[in-house]
Image (cartoon, rainbow, N blue to C red; front, side):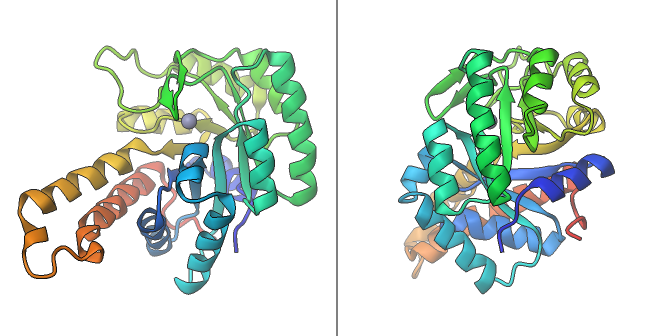
Length: 288
Ligand SMILES: [Zn+2]
């Protein structure tokens, strides 16, 4: 059964660890992440961007696939199916399709409009028991064609959005999506500290988890981050393993062309990446 992310994140914030959000792109991705979460007895959040939603034939297809897997793979750990960086329309579509968690990214609207739209979604999600993530201060880098500058959020704006009754809050603290440039200044812990001081128990979300050094991740968790999004790192792991398989000519040996064999190294590489992240975030063994 899919669950809201509320309980797992409340526990994570109180227990000083973070739950990973791993974005999915297809069946192999989803299966690898779910099996790893079960093996490590870790709660997990499956992230779906609007672009990935279209790629996987729409939100209803995804809900069907994930619910089927939870049953057929006997997954017992808490799993939330979460819309990543949703538009207002996308959020409504995912609520209707049966997602258990939603991110509405209103960070590109003026704060008043972000508040108004987030408020509408707070009411809808409350009634249905769905968790809701809001964003303040755009997160840098490019995601599905949306480019952000990597700014730091205003702690007062964070408080205004947190007070609307959202479940978790993504705030820009110098983090960016995708690979970090060599001249990256690092996370702004000063900003994070100020945001936590204003928002209290609210679980904070760190986007762009790929390539942030382990010590920065740990410090961010100690300052109130309870959810960390990982996307690019799984893609790179998959790509590298698939490239190796082809370069070694394994697709040319025997039935090496069988897609179940061709995609297996990539799927295993995703498992290893997810495991490494769950260990770093401290969510191993926290399923109960
Ligand atoms: Zn993000």
